[in-house]
Length: 206
Image (cartoon, rainbow, N blue to C red; front, top):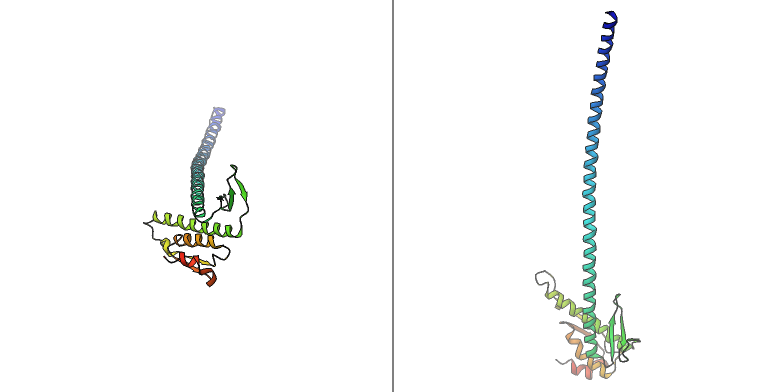
């Protein structure tokens, strides 16, 4: 009987220790479950952040493509307008080209194969005038499409030119004098008496 009672006491103590251990394990399991849930929430947040990053990168790539397309379209439209203005002034068969860096050059297309040619001082001046006129024309067209936006009209941006006829002979002076007034709504030209008189004075009387 004594041995049985001693064994019962030992088993009771062991049972209490086991129950205490079970409670300890349960508490530990709850802590691990909370950590697992926390990590799961963190993973969900990371996945959401990654999805946002992916969507943002995709939007940036699409916007860059749109920007490149608009830039290419603007450059081609600008080049076309430069060619139109240049052909109105120049007597040469050369064609202005505008590369991706917006650098102007002349090409001779008479031989069938476009060939770069060196522009003379007068041709460089005509190229500059054509470039400025084309830009103003593009801005004028763009401002028309932005009529709902509060912005200055193209007429508030005048062209101011200092001695535009100095490097030109008589025939080119007349061509420039006829073309320049239509480049902008406001035009200010500074010239000497010798540059003004003759064909320039005649064609500016409008």
